Image 1 (cartoon, rainbow, N blue to C red):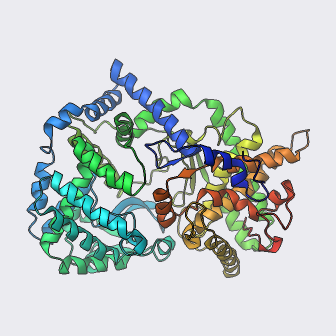
Image 2 (image 1 turned 90 degrees about the vertical axis):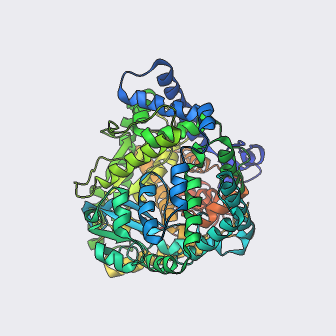
Image 3 (image 1 turned 45 degrees about the vertical axis):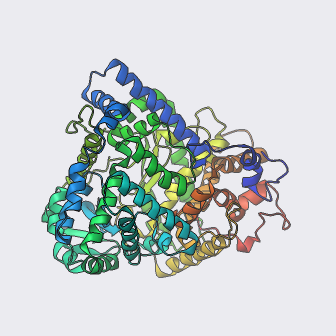
Length: 638
């Protein structure tokens, strides 16, 4: 702690200030703090599992595949000896594309094996019919993190370095006219970026739900060969019988760009995508050049991660649940799951009491909120059923082929969902991940084993610390069910307006107050920059409600306790909350997050306590304190 900073003035600085001054970010990381430290711990544990499987040779097929994939990644001698040979057929195909129709078919196959194309697509349950899967289409096609990077003057140097990077990659791949092609790629991506919606606008769940038939998809973007694309992706017209287009105007814009852009520029664009996609699996020159821009220039990270760490990431991306099953057996005791069940139950009860006492919400809407709360499905630790990898095949000494095989397996798994019942048991994260999520389409909250560690949670920790840590995370994820997006989904997972007009208006007034509050925040590491309150409002609502409800849940957990809840107990909830947000980021990463991330910078996540009466009571704040807000200015939703 930094005792020179009072918690009443800056809780984040009080808890983390000395650490921020003294701690260095590891040279292969763009940020550092409890989230990353736990991820590093999990990475080491998974590495040990993989090494043991590699050394002893597993008896089961999954173990053999894990060992084979990892071995192919670590076999640098073979990778160097093969050089560009594994990629050559794809490069030649990209270089000889005849027209945009030909390109659509190429991109379908390329995307099926892990590449990216002109837009993003994924399979999920239908926002308005949660019992079926459909394909979603989103804006995409960019090489830089966001459309802002193509138009904002503060990213002009990034754009120059991006062109230089593209030229380097073209040169390594032996592609002619490297400089000219690199400039063409930036021009083309800039055209695509002109059709992108701004990040905050993409949060509107009504505007981004646009159900289209296959024929209507073709009308939106007639210059694109949808038949050829989906066929080579591994599907058919039936796959796209009905789809949801998140940003229809982007596809209209794309059709214009497809028509107006010279084919030679498209060939350069596709070649750049092919090289970037394959770079991690090619000789070291490609790996280093790729990192030099995406890691060092964009993220500010000085050093490429050790090869074994990148190998672990590849294995987890390909067979994460197979590794996760072993991870859970070793590192997630049954006692932790039982305690988490109690924590979740207390958080749900705290939400129930909070909703019951809301003065701004009508009884009609409250009953519907209770119904949604009753239907929440918690997932804790690990899946009840594990993924089947029996159809996945790897090839000794063929790293690039193994990477595309893993991606193709996942594409086929996703496409197979179309027409099948929605799998309510599927997990969208791995057990070893240090994260959590709420899925509005299934009304579920998920807490992987990886995050159920100190400082977020420990079966031996002081309960106040657990509630200030994982309790607030649980509250945050439940809160997403009632934020600006989640509040528009009902308890069955359908996009359905269950609010009265008056209650919705009251909710929006409170949300706007939070947006205005966050718009005024300037990160201490980025003077002159400001938080985007509209972009971050959903996560800010989650933080605000999550911590407030976690605090109430802690008090509920103490109701049968004969001892009194002391001031120190109450303070520990908030102190551990601030500790969990201990984070140090490189300047380049901090700017990128501020531009594209829907989460506020950690200092403002921790200091959201300024809105909570319970914090002001626990720390006896007064109007001259830095975190003081007049009671009428404090935003309280749940």
